[in-house]
Amino acid sequence: MNDALAHERLDEVLELIDTWGDLYNRRRGNRPPYQEQPEIDSQVDKLVDKVRARTKLAQDVIAAMGEASLAAKVAEHEEGMAGGHPFTRARIAIVEAIAILTQREELAEIVGPVGPRLSASELHPIIWGAAARLPSGVARSEPARAARDAGNVELRCTPRRSG
Image 1 (tube, rainbow, N blue to C red):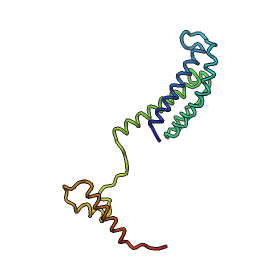
Image 2: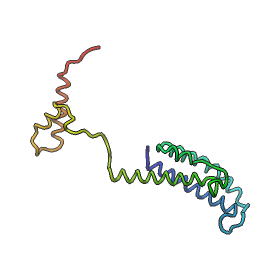
Image 3: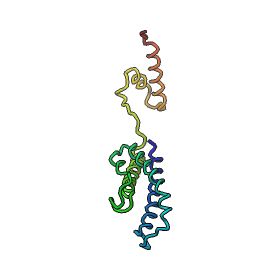
């Protein structure tokens, strides 16, 4: 998963929810000047479908992150059910998901790239022996080259069975 792109998309969805939520609350008189503003109904209605679509994307991204219980919270609910507008609970879940992604990015910076690791004692004696015979002052690539060449010779000398 591309955590940086997921983070970017979730930020975009969060901004969209906040924009729509502000319009919604102003329309209902829940924001200054604390009077209902029916004249902005069309703006609220026009934007809500985009909020629904992008919220579904956010839900899918969060599920792909492996956060199924958090993804389940990213949904429209009845007005006032979670306090505020119908996407308040989704907004909170998206903020939590962004925090998880941020922590993953920070941990990746601290830990660095993680890949398979193999200690020298786990190598086959043919490989380890070829690398170990080299003097300690040689460049790092020389033991690797010697081990590779020893492995290739061994493979070429191994009889192959047919079928």
